[in-house]
Image 1 (cartoon, rainbow, N blue to C red):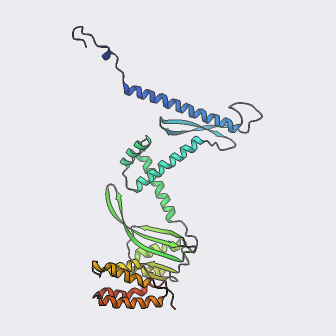
Image 2 (image 1 turned 90 degrees about the horizontal axis):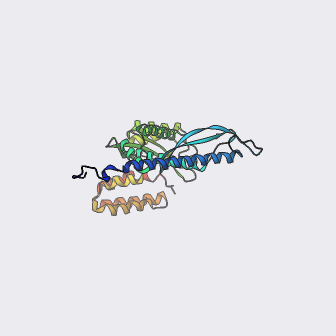
Image 3 (image 1 turned 90 degrees about the vertical axis):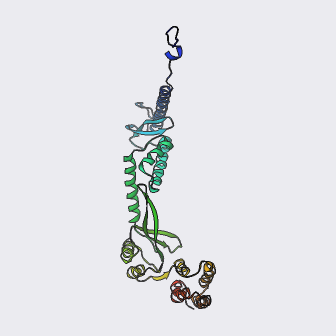
Length: 329
């Protein structure tokens, strides 16, 4: 305001709201994009029908059956599409396929974020930053239900074909839940088909590595169709070995070499672990059971000579459990 005249300056009289202008321009662009896309859909429908709407011609091959609305996220914002429906054929267009691909990619990203332990609030913020649209908590909740349904369907699927080799192990993984990290116990079964392909047959969460937990897990696998197992490999967990004998009586048991090595290493000085590892691997590098047993006896004597009596006792008593895969000559 001019102090002398008491009048407002031109700059104060004419004020341009930049935010309003951006919103207005954005709405104009969005409206234009929406109008153009719907016009493209109409033109595509005319092409598929062989005639325009309400046009009578001998070249017509189909007729309209109304339309349905579908939203589509674009860089200009969310637009509403009126997708034509045809009576004799399915209406397909590159616009819808692009929407489906984008919808699928967003859903996959949401799934990965959820499984990684990202909170619902963070999911909302991330999706808004990436795609310009904030995913509601209800959408995330519905997606979670879909994920659980798919996981359950995978867990309950029939086990087809033969799996002569079966690997069983219990592992502990960290899971992020509501901002808190917890340890989760998992029982895992991996089968090898007759063609030599590995396949994860089942995963059980929360079960303990005891006879009760392993029995329930193996029963679940057998009921789904696990059969023709010739060799099962696992650690020497007593409850597990007993359960294998109960539910897979025809299968031979092989002690996991890696677990066995770690048991021996626990009675070996840290500075000697590498040397002992080479000696143990030499046992399993033999081409026959006879040669492996002979090498094992030599290793036992070497360990005793190095004053590793407990390690020598373990090898002498249990190395045979790790040689089930070999054949006697």
